[in-house]
Image (cartoon, rainbow, N blue to C red; front, top):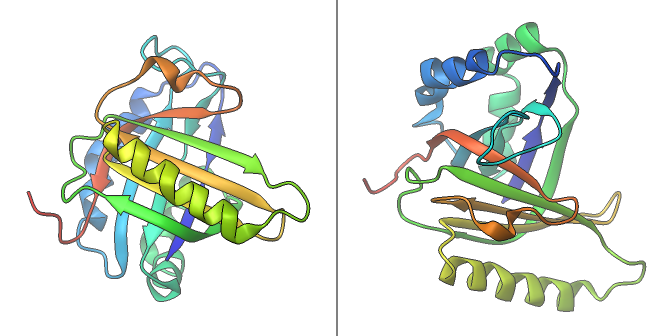
Length: 190
């Protein structure tokens, strides 16, 4: 599996209603996209008291079954239209170590993303086992999705979680919290 995210930092005075409306209008378009495990339509609003952040962001997160689906999406009309509206984003990808998903992710209202530098010469197998345990623990704590992955070019670890409601421990270091506008999950049991 491949985890993927791109993001757009929007001006401080940007009307985030535009993003929420865009998600409401277009979110369903990927509900049955081939090779997609899920897409979380994420945004951060610096004026949101529920999930305060430093910046206004639009930053969708994808979990792909394989590269075929990702390439089909990136080469398709939907992504081309997005780039015409917001610009050409830098796209981050990670090799997935662990992905635990609830049968239905539609109850997700918020997400957290941690990107952590792996120390040089880390024992990757031990890191992978620890991340599998952390993902399982977060699912036990109420997460709807827990994805752990790594990226070997910059040696970073990704921890991505979907949650049904905000938690007090979201405000942590460099963690990015997002609101979820919609989740596309082909084949979801609803």
